[in-house]
Image (cartoon, rainbow, N blue to C red):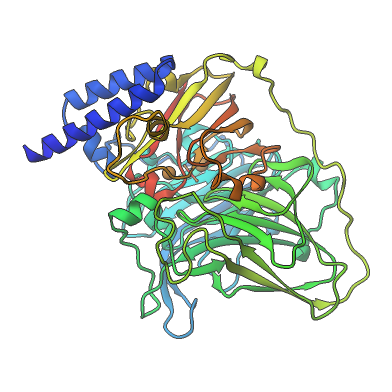
Length: 546
Ligand code: C2O
Ligand code: CU
Ligand code: CU
């Protein structure tokens, strides 16, 4: 009974918060309506918000289709193994290992001495088959974060396979050139599996990109940034307490490409750095230590129309950056550090000490040493690529954005007032296949607080959330911020909103409008917070594309 009261009280708090902040948004009225019903029918919300108790239909894992003729075929295994990360005892990790069965040999490249998954390089237009084998002792499924593929191939948690099973993915690469992230997506266990090592990059190339002759081969370098917490025996620890789940688990060691104190030896020329934030929750504010600006040529969905020059760039979990780094003015022996600079406001618990590595403090990411003086270098193109950006008048709902309302409390992390449920879309989560939709992402509770409503017991619960939508990339139409911008000012110059995105960092008190096409595939496509602790707690929903 006590339990019921607690959940009831939480429900009341959330619903009043929602109602105060959201009057006037018709879609949200539906959300609140269904939420009330959900609670009336039992404790479902409670369980699912803790990342369990979501049931899926029983499926046999997808088998290969004899009529599908792949250009590229690979085996992908996820398996427990050990790697040496710190001095001394090797670390037990989970790792993706790809083996090429058919296709160009550059399709699979391993990162030496790393737990990170093999880099998979695909060409637009290729037909790809991946035989995914689960050699873990728990269920898992692979999601190709950033690739636009049919629901069945998207790594939805309903397709998670058990230990020892094999799941076959078959899809055509329809993305433009970009960098994607493959990672597990079993509901409630995504964060832990990623944290223990399961993550890798899928790079797509196309002709538009090839015509630019950007730095490639040894001059194109992936930099996957993660943070991990090691214990005294060099083992990864993943057992976040309630506070760590609320703010996100952060580690005491920064790893780049799976290595601590990562350094890169370069020639004095231009490089293309393919940067990915593979951390479960840590947000970075990337900058060069000597004041050289960050030159960004691409983001999640591929190349920008033209380079953007920024003093620093924000990079939230799940986001990618294509950085042009020109060392040609430097002499042999020059050294340079990629850092995360100080910022504030992303989390109420930001001040907490994590071995000197609190989120928002200043710390190094990796070091670059110029070890060779050369005279030839690529020149930065002034024009990069053509991007189709939809105008608001091309959307199906220019005056009625679909809401993505973020609400958070110590017990539940919700979107549109609901924790994750399988195949139970709200009216605002049903969209027509082939349509282009306007969406608005905002905080349900912080607005309430600003409206002078009920207190939150003195606790500032407002924090930043990197919101990710599966399927096709979207464009960021506008950001607006209400209230005191002191914290916001420490990050706001670091957003790259001119490209195509699949993950967007939404700061406290910020509202972000995006335009997203829902073309090509019907079915259930997830959207969720890419703070993976939040995702596992239930801050995830689905769009039903119909
Ligand atoms: Cu990178 Cu649904 O996630
Ligand atoms: Cu994704
Ligand atoms: Cu979040």
